Image (cartoon, rainbow, N blue to C red):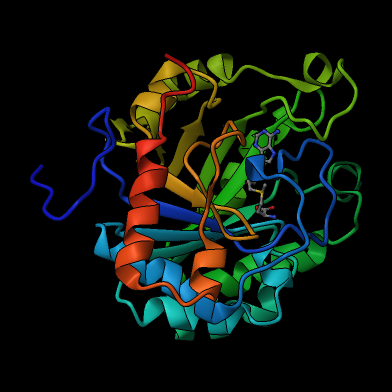
Length: 310
Ligand code: SAM
């Protein structure tokens, strides 16, 4: 593939996407949450600051923007943020949410220029939902998901983290729910998280996706691999689609990583898995530095990229 105007890091990895965590605030409190690898902070960037960051990212060749959190929809200015990013004409703008506020925002987000959405939904069982999220918003989340489909956000992907003896038996029901509503199901392998203070958490809930994946391979009509994103496998079954998201703590994840991140308080984060090499960005924007200077700061962040797992 010919890639013009794309900056590569020193390991020849092109920087194609930017994941911006626009808030640490969330309206749920999932037992396993890794908070997108972010250090807690109360400072948040304004829509104009986020717009400037995306403008500079576009200049260095970034094609895709994903907004995450916390939950991005707890920000009251989320539609304005999407609108400002969309004015820059990216190839793809997406967002990851728990869906609780999606009923309220889906149409406005679509109209503002959002292309697609990932919604975290680990279960269709109200009790399990409350156990995992510590909230009883299952109906609201389902309503939000259906609204996203209705307004034409496409594809809607459902992120389902698989936990041993919690929801491993629900994959079939979730797949049917997704298929019925023309959505893609992503099965995510649980990874260890600092939020889970109990050392035994991983041992108790971790469920390797190997077994599930073998079953999918047996019944799939077709299997494809994504070029980036760690060569994730996609299984096509009876007109439905399941994607497998493996843990990030391995060398193949690092080798195919084409993503740079920005923290809620405006620092460039070169690697999901570490916080000791963040690059200050927001103070330069607030001091009115030129776009050329901001580009240099981006390049500094890219130069700090090292594969976490060799
Ligand atoms: N609040 C939003 C949401 O619920 O989707 C966005 C933030 S959440 C940190 C982003 C994604 O990370 C969700 O799909 C969630 O399921 C996933 N995630 C969080 N902690 C995880 C863990 N320990 N293992 C695997 N996936 C995790």
